[in-house]
Image (tube, rainbow, N blue to C red; front, side):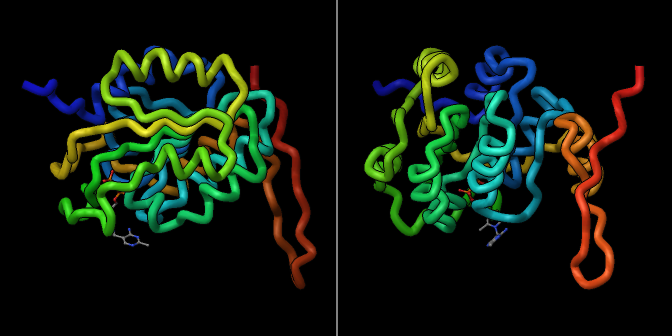
Length: 213
Ligand SMILES: Cc1ncc(C[n+]2csc(CCOP(=O)(O)OP(=O)(O)O)c2C)c(N)n1
């Protein structure tokens, strides 16, 4: 009998256990974010709502902007297929501090479980040919634990495709995710400068105030 396919939560438990305190996470829409908010909510989490396939490009931008921190992006396989160009761009930019966890459930879970256009792609192989430094297909939480530690210790970008059971049932986040609040909380946590616009595009970047003691 073949071993049971792990759930997204099985992997998230390992992630919560092993994530460095100052690491940034970007999670894709649906349960990718709702469940992560339940397992380990923190200001350094950026939860995406609705925009499919944008966890990877956003994580790439953060990794480049914050080279001193580890950045972990969680993307869905449907989202990756929709925005395949991002896979190629990461390979070209090659930020060493970026790790992407691909939840490979082979369906569009958050919209009801429709099968992917192609359920048999070896996405880790695609990432490898695009120039990612580390790529691995992972089938269980134990394998994930060691692959994730190696990814954190070594130079990336790392792409770990995690074989997971589809979770069509929507998980309730601890509270409704408000995109504006999520963005502001995240920007404060990473002390990101704020863009203040003015007429005719002459905006300026404003440094955040010093942290209150
Ligand atoms: C551009 C776009 N197209 C379609 C949708 C509708 N939609 C919401 S979730 C989803 C499926 C996401 O699948 P996947 O990225 O594989 O993540 P999973 O839910 O399986 O973890 C779809 C098609 C959307 N939000 N955005």
